[in-house]
Length: 186
Image 1 (cartoon, rainbow, N blue to C red):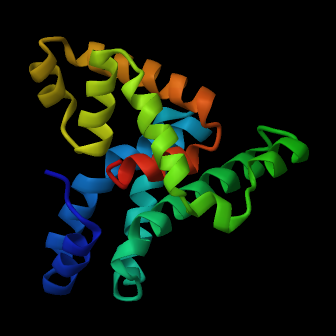
Image 2: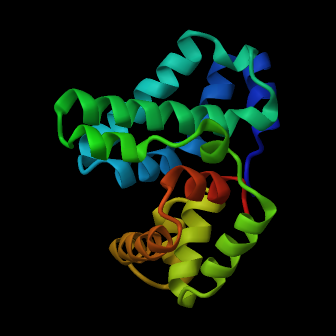
Image 3: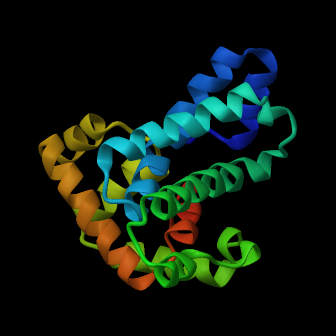
């Protein structure tokens, strides 16, 4: 069962530890995968997501957010951190950096038509690939749980996930929209 943004913010109202645990369970993997789609540094992507969580809790941003804005806020924060890292490391030219910039409304709004197109693209994926994406990203399951349900190894789940996300990114090149749509649970 997917944890809702409302549940996370309500948990923060009760206890920062409880809210932090739910936040991590719901958003850590999708945000790491999202940041990995923008950067080619697996170690840094995890650190960056943890830094975003730390900043979110330290600044008590959870007190200022509406439930529907939590995912948008987190994805925007990670995207900005990725773009800052790219710019600071001069890994790409200015033109490439500007190509990643998208109008805020476009980057953070998923229209019903786009959701339908993403849903159709996921339905068109091979069965095990679809199950890996839905299990890990949408349902927030651990790789081991998905591997057990599919009778495959954890490494196979990671491979299925990588191939599935590559296919989806080919159809939907803006990773922010794709991952936001996936995290909203299709």
